[in-house]
Amino acid sequence: MPVTSSSETFATFFDDWLNHHRQLIEQLAHFADEASTSVTQVEEESLVTKFLSHCLQYYQEKSSAMSVAGEDLYDFFSPPWLNSYEKLILWIGGFKPGMVFKLITTSVNDLTSHQKDQLESIRLETQRRERALTRGFALLQQSVGDPLLMVRFKNIGALRLGEREQPGMKEEEAMEVLKKEMTEVMKNADQLRCVTVEKVVEVLNPRQAVKLLRAVGEFYLRLRDLGVQIETLL
Image (cartoon, rainbow, N blue to C red; front, side):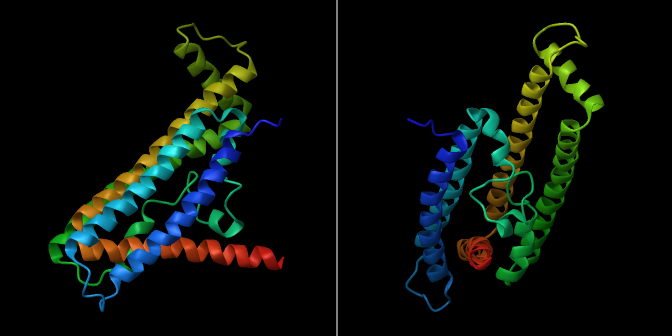
């Protein structure tokens, strides 16, 4: 009986998760409709919480899958369960956190001056952390094809094992250290994605949060559906 890989297991989870995602976006679209006067603030808050929990589930499942991925680890940086159009927006295996601020400007038109100041502060901090992660990830990518940079991971591996630097450390051991470093970068990127959205939602009122999350969800679904349509024609 063939063994199911970590990435294949996650791909199955993703299919189910995506179906639920579409259902939640439909609810957000209904709640965001200005004509939907029957929707209460409590209901809006409940749906926002449900949607954020849904997104958190994705990252929890992803983290669990990556922890046992082995050689499948690299699939999570260029996921085979995504189409070519979805991959256009990939940043360290997912969406770039700063994208949420662009979607705010197109989906929420009643921000107060205080909210704008708060969001700008979050945006700048997010941008700073994005740059730091981008630099770290670039070094990891470069090290894969650069024998001189690979020495760094051999040395790190030796230090973590409580040993002295060993110039003769096996390449396989260096690659294991590299994979641990890549997992850590992905973990930090996913954490920034979640924290950024959570902080932004905290600034918004329930109706504004519904509008933003609807815009975020619909943007992704349009990108995915367009990619599927184009790949079907090729």
